[in-house]
Structures are given as C-alpha cells and as structure tokens.
Image 1: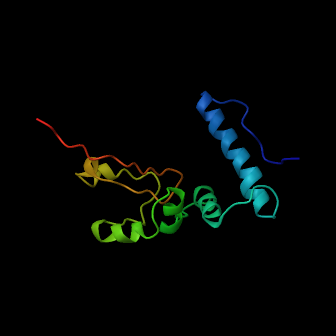
Image 2 (image 1 turned 120 degrees about the vertical axis):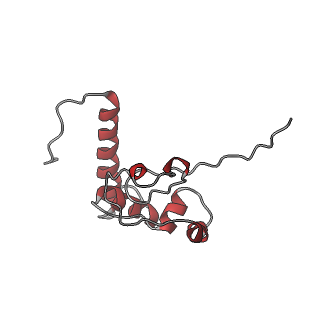
Image 3 (image 1 turned 135 degrees about the vertical axis):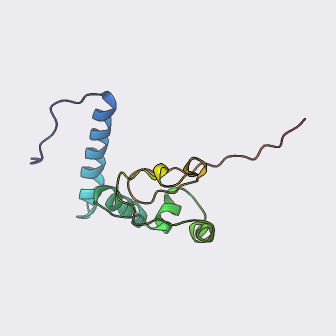
Length: 126
C-alpha cells in the first residue's frame, strides 16, 4: 500500500491532472525503473526525472539535446554566444535584473519547463 498522503481536493482540474501525471509517471516509471521493473527508460530520461524531482538538480546539455531532438553538440556551439547562468535560485525574476529579457532566448535546464521553438524565417514581399 502507498504510504504517501494524497490531497483531498484540487482547486482546478489542471492541478488534479498535474498531480495524477506526476504520481503515475513517478510511481510506474522512475520508481519502478530504479528496481529494474516497469518502464524501460533511457539514461537521458532518468536524468530528466532526477532534475524535476530533486531540489536544485540541473539537466545536462546532452540530455536537453536528446529530449528536444536537437543535434548532438548544438548547446556547446551556442555557448560562445550566450550568458550561462547556472546558479540562479528557483523563482528568481530575471526581468528585474536584465532589461532586455523580453528579447532573450532562454534555455531552462533546471526544473521541469523547457521549450525549444523553431520559427521559420519569412521574407517580406512588398
């Protein structure tokens, strides 16, 4: 039997869905995989699980590339053109400190959220 207490109520449907998703994936993939049962996870998948479940864990660039179907080494190639901030505390609002943050392209390798979006270049016709 599961010893962990579960919430009695959720204030929004998305909260319930997030909780159930975290619970099911955690229980049947990450926990069972650690004992050799359940989902068969690749190393980058296990690393992702550790980064979102453990406090302060950071996802490696190679795992980020695999998760987002990026070519191997693309993050290293971008590094000379970036400001790498790998010691930011959770919840910090960078827009207060960096005036051009609205124009920045950010890769978040710490936590559960990352988005890589390819935007096609469109030529203007007059």
